[in-house]
Structures are given as C-alpha cells and as structure tokens.
Length: 447
Image 1: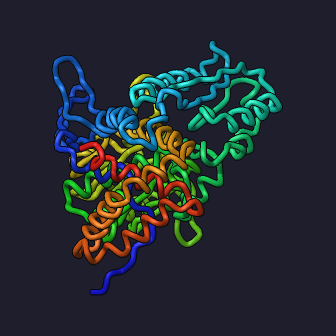
Image 2: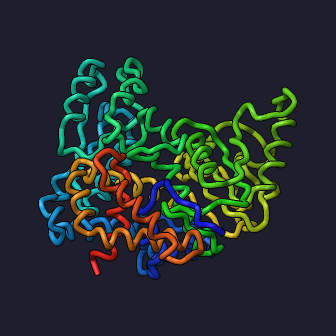
Image 3: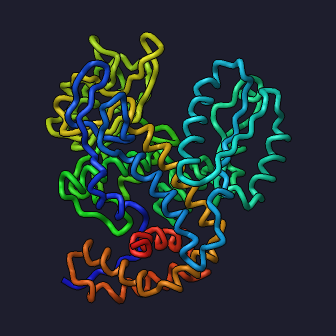
C-alpha cells in the first residue's frame, strides 16, 4: 500500500506518557468502603500507608518540572525560566459568598499543581462590586503581559458581578495564545473543527486522554502521531451537551474516527416526541450500544429511573464497556460527590472512573500542562531555534512516529517527516506545530 502523507499535528507528551512502566492506568483502590479493581487512575492518590500506582496527574506534573529544569541544557532555551511564567486565575466574589466557596477550593488545587510543574501560580481576586469596565481594563493588561502564560476566569462570578457582567463576552476577549481554559468561543470553534489552535478545552481533552491510555495500553489500539488513540470502529456515547464539555467532546471524538452516539440531552427523542417514556427508551437503546460512555450530564432532575437519581443504571450499560464519568455533583447529603453512572453499573464495565481521582485530576493536569505550553508560545522563536539546532533528532522522531502509525518502515516515512519538520520551524506556520515537536523530542534530548 502506498504511503499516505500525514499532515495533521504530530508530537506532544502522550507518546512519552504511554511508555512509562510506572504509570499504571488501571488500579485497584477502595472508595467509600468498597473495593474496586478496574479504576481509571487520574491522580495516583496516596492514603495512609497504602500507595496506589502512579496516575495521569502524578506522572505528568513532575515531568513538566523535569523538562523545565532541562532548559538550561538546551542553548536556545537556556534563558527561559519556568518560574517566571505565570498561570493567572481571576476570581470574582466576596469571601463570605458560599456561591464561590467551591471555586476558591478549586483555585487552590490548581495553584498547588501549577507550582509543582515549575510554573508560578497567580490569583487576582475582585469583590462582587467590580464593574465591567474594570474587568475589561484589567484583561487588556493581562493579555499584553508577556510573563503570563495563560489566564482564565473562574466561573461563575459571585454576587452583583455575576448578574451584571456578561462573562461570555468577557472571555471572548482573552487572547487565543493565553486561553488555556478554552473559554474563548474562538478556541471552542477551532477545537470543534479540528483546526490549528493553541489549546483545547481542559475537561474534554483530559477525558479523551484517559480513554486513549486505556485503549492503547489495554486494548492495543493504534496510537495516532498526535498522541491520541484511534477510536476507529468504536461506538462512543456522549451524555451531555454543555458548551465546555459535552459539545466539544462530541466534536473531538469525531476527529479521532469514533462512531459518535448522542449527545444525549433533555430534549432527546424520536419522531418529534421527547416525552419521558420516549426519552428513556432512546437513552437506553443508545447507551447499551456504546463501547465507551462519556458521562457529562451533571446533576439534573431527569428522573429517568424510579429507583435511582443517577442517569445511567446497570441495565443501560454494555458488558465490557469503558466508562469515563466527568460529572461530580454534591447532592443527597451535600457532602459526598456523585457522578452520572450508578455504582451498580460499574461491575459491568471493563474499566471506569470514580467521582474522585478520575476526570477532575485529569482536567487540572491538562490545565497546568497548557500553562506550560503557554510559556513556550511566549518564547516561540527560541523554540523554533531549538528545533533547528536539533533537526536530525526531530526528523528521526517524526519518522518513527509516522512509521509506527502507518505500519511501514522509517525510511518510507522520512520524506513526510522532513516536510513536517519544515512546517514546525517555519515562521509562517501555527506555533502549535513547533511546540508539539519540542515536546516529542524532549525524551531524546534528555537521555
């Protein structure tokens, strides 16, 4: 078969990640008094004396620090100091406002992980009386500050600001090269189209990564040159259609060759009918077909089942499927987190995420990683010079990745690799290609 030239993104950190023996993607762990044996490990949690194998977050975050420390060994990058690059979070709300209490906790978790990666965490806090004009003036300053790698608004805003400031319009003013949380609608659109872009939305991207690791390491799926598993031949269900999770996830999966079912939502139906009985039938018919279930409904009073408030129960789940559940809502007693999938359904799955230690840590990790990438985007000329200084390594690495994907020899892929190298170092190409390439060759440079 003739070699088919590859022209999409190539490189990234996942090729390195999947090769790490200490990174155990599926683990056994207790949770709420129950023992689970096929848990997708997003964090690598340590409780007491019981240590679980390393997870997604615990593997990537220290690696980012290790790579940042190695900059001084690369002549073109030696002047980049990761500690000077700031990941900025903007929090709006009064300290006694319970509506932003969860946001404060989340910002703290992001800040700790950011510092572990070698970057600096920065928070700008405003009272609920802050005006639209003040926010726009500050945003202009942050967009022009070269020391800020990415910036994000922690939503929702609290108090008066939450009612009077159009946060969608505000987020659409975030510079694309700093939109690490994917809040600018332009980022969302580029991501959905599979077009060249700086970043992806963190939660759907993290969900795809978790599923990719499982498919590659446990099911032998083919790894694409961009570091994502091929979902070819798999029926994949997306439950939920929010603008920052369900909808972009649905579009991402199409780009990775999945047969996508859904997205399911409150108006799902057939033949013009969306009554409860019709919805329950369609929900069940689609979910029982799915090889992978991505739950991102969140808690809504669907009342799909008489005996449980979970969206998915055991009879809706296909034996041996994979469950990636992004939903975490604090209902019932207001303290314990719950997802979309009833625990009784998990026994039918080959592997699944729990409400804690799964998608949440993957989302935070993706955000920190994109802050790290933002630092490189701010120094793109130095990144391209580093690639030029290591052309042989870039071409050899690209040839290996392309050959593995196409199941051909590296010699057959060398010409394609050369053209992709030329694209990465060109000032006319999107910076993402240079940054992806640098991430791909780091393991070779650090040997």
